Image 1: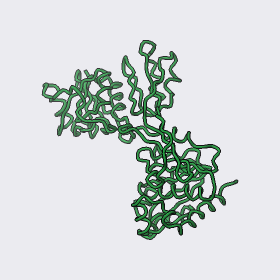
Image 2: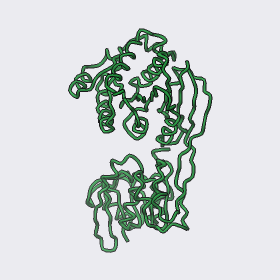
Image 3: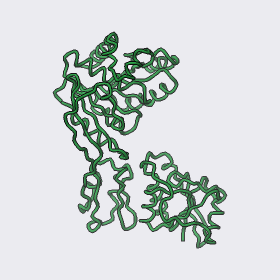
Image 4: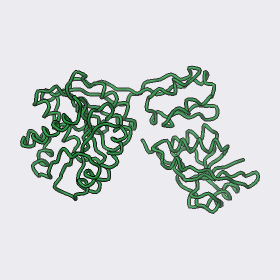
Amino acid sequence: MKIAISATGNDLCSTLDARFGRTSQFIIYDLDNDSYISVDNEQNLTSAQGAGIQSAQTIIKAEAEAVITGNVGPNAFRTLTAGNVDIYLGTGLTVQEAIDKFKNGTLQKASGNNVEGHWM
Amino acid sequence: MQISIASGKGGTGKTTIATNLAYFLKKQNKTVTLLDCDVEEPNCHLFLHPTWTSTEKSTSKIPLVNMSKCIKCGRCGDICHFGAIANIKDTVLVFPELCHGCGGCSIVCPTGAITESEKEIGDVQTGTADGLEIVQGLLKVGEPMSPPLIRSVKKYANTDDEFVIVDCPPGTSCPVIESLKNSDFILLITEPTPFGLNDLKLAVDVVNELKIPFAVGINRSTIGDSTVWDYCKEQNIPIILEIPHDRHIARAYSEGILLLKALPQYEEKFADILEHIKEVLPS
């Protein structure tokens, strides 16, 4: 199973980026063999709107089944849900710490968007 | 002839110039329609006090997907520049607040699974003030997508009129582009401050891209610094209007009185604008 983590850098020491839509990177971590790749999200960083939807599509394409991030808005939540991606919320963690917490089941799962959209 | 009044920065005096230019033209016995395309906050009416004669609902088209006909080819999502339609696994998601209503998705759909439904986005109001036709868009509160409403407002322009004056929204993004479309001439209003200059440069980039003749007008020209003049000189951009920072103007403005009604001595400045436009445009 693969999980995605919004991150400020491209390795496991990077900090978890609280922003989902406008995170600079996603770490796609494969729990089956403890390997990872980073996916650049730069394009979304500068997109005018719809960043949450685009980011959700990016990690769905990367075959992630869960995401760890700080905040998700309504559009990101809708898109992730349609793609069967579970959402876990974390804050003030490194990517490695977020993965460890996910593994031992201490991360909070989101049942809805925890922030409002930027257009409402 | 469509003359559009734009700026990068907000609060530089677009509405002051647009309303007074329209009023001035009307006084010269021209036929004029003033279009208030700043649909998020139309304010020409504050100075013209029109009598509204009609209000019509304006709608934008948003896609409606019939999943039983969808073959999940993904073409609808690929063509949308605004990410308003997303192909996710077994479903298609539509995000109405991102949709610009272009209809591209329904055209590329090979199975006819996408039809369009109407979404109410605001009102278009028409009225008259001092013989001047005025049209304004009023975007529904909470509706983020103004270009379709601006398009509706512009459809009300009377093509027989000698002049159509467009009061644009501030900024340099989609609503401004939509407002500027089909302009014969653009007047960019700025103020001589670092903010004014910064946003003027952005606006000039946009207008250059659109390849429409333009000039600059400097409002509150007696404050700030000389950098706007320096920039215009360097770029060979004509400055065809300068309005000083004048307490009397501010007073009339605060009372909702048109500049040219309160201070008719400024008429000459508006005559100069038209003189310049006449010179640069092939008649």
